[in-house]
Length: 301
Image (spheres, rainbow, N blue to C red):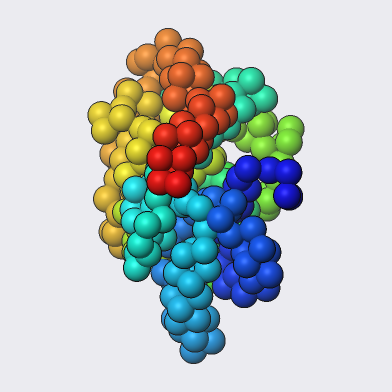
């Protein structure tokens, strides 16, 4: 590590175990932040989590004050990490992907009779907002059949609700293959008309995010719905629909209307791929990081 000018290190919650590393290399370290650390810990209101969150709130500024700089993947996250710090420069560099490594899986043609949705997450934590989607499906009474494929690990209460919906709703079919990767994931994406991104970030007191999976959707040509502000996605995007970031059930009729509009744009997958190359590729993000080091950190030195 002594040979490097800077070390970019993803910030890990409750960093006490790394105190020696921070002490030795602090002024070379640029921490990268992907969430509001304390608020994420608090998202499950148990006693042990409240204690852990208080400890995180205490430790984070004391570790970060030793560092060279801070990168947050959104402005909200950057401001949170810089809270209470003086003289530590920060910048926003959103998540990127290697576009050429992502297969093209343009949205399957929506025929107006059956809507295929895919929702992917390693595990469906509360901030994924799956419960909002399930509540919307429970309320849905339309004639268009809905198939929802959930790629990820589920909590028992979600499994029970899914079983209830599948039993009660003849126009809804929820399929749960579990957490999958590689060709299985690509196959599920290729079958989908729309993808789903996080719908419950308010549970971490977050309004902004830039999930990696949405970058995969864009690079692959798959339109999606989401419920937060993404710095990289235009406010009036041709390929994404932004929903409210709250407890309300998802309006399935509105999702169907959005799918219909997407089906009227056969050129959209190519447009999305080009957008990903120009705005989301790692080459773009690397240039932004170099610019931060050369103009932000060196000017502060």
